[in-house]
Image (cartoon, rainbow, N blue to C red; front, side):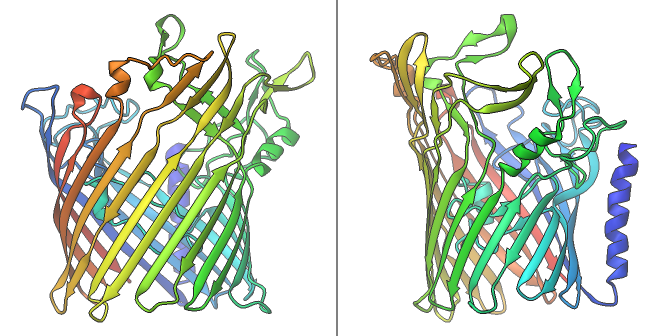
Length: 500
């Protein structure tokens, strides 16, 4: 049944292409592969440190060779669709030549770790625009129209990636079925208003299905279809599930003055929640986590604002900041039959997601052939304050920051050379329990901060009328594994892109 549903979705996309074939059709194809990685480890001998066919990913070997086809079309700009299909060779965890079939510890359910997988990728949506100033999108939505102007360079995936390359201003994304409404009033040029409900799923249908919808496709349910009473019974209570869906609603406003500036403001909803990793493992295997490893996780609404200055020819400056709202004592989606209501947690303490920020700058010169790009991103002050083991306590996550610089130079008629350099820093947490700092005089805490850097060189050659082939060399260097860091990695990435 799962295969039939996947085939149905792909067939539907292809039929849509056929239906629009005599109209406006476009698309593209890209392929990313890494023919070799050299990994230097502290904790193992030389064997296993050279990875052949390691695939895509941030210095990781647990990836695959990806080919992606993007297809989009529309009829008179009134109705249209967008989707992409991935052909992913899942080489998970070993060289192509010595991995036994069916032995895939990183993904135990994979039939064969060296197998070709066909699936829908990042997005798949249909849209309807009854007028020039109103548009509805439904599906797995990806919309970056308000995001920013200085994005991360792809080479950083193999040098040192950003903590959040979209940290200047978050883009609209729904991994399952979502709904996006865009309103651009004709009487106010450059002004846009969005309402977005991600992970809408199917909150108004039956809670149980004869066959589960396949994960990772357009048919993914909302996350709120099942409420477990603790007795094993599944209760279908649409009111609560719908409420949790709409808690995740976004509202976004943007105003762009042509060639001058672009201002954005948005509220991003979320189902409130929070946790701290006091223990690791479960049941009898649970053990206490050392205090220098305490981390606060938060799901909470947040407010974001960004401003881009476009008033100087060749120069772009884009600054964004976000702050989470504090949450505590939230209502869960678990129903208490005896109390006849949903369980509300008490004495959770106050969770705060902290402050995130991003800054991007781009300056072009020599008729646009030389471009200097810079990004800095980070998050700080994520914290929890409450009671732990009968004492007042506060935990603050480490500061995280990243800096990236990538100048590029285009040689007319030849190609583009890009040099990339990056630096990431993760600080140390702070802990106070009953006025006592358990990290004091701790050698582990002293060595808990992380500094990693990397750099690379990539050469891009144009092919055909709208394609390119890029290949390069990248290096990443992190805190040694013996101190909890990462291995050092040399990577050769190759990318092919074609647009039609």
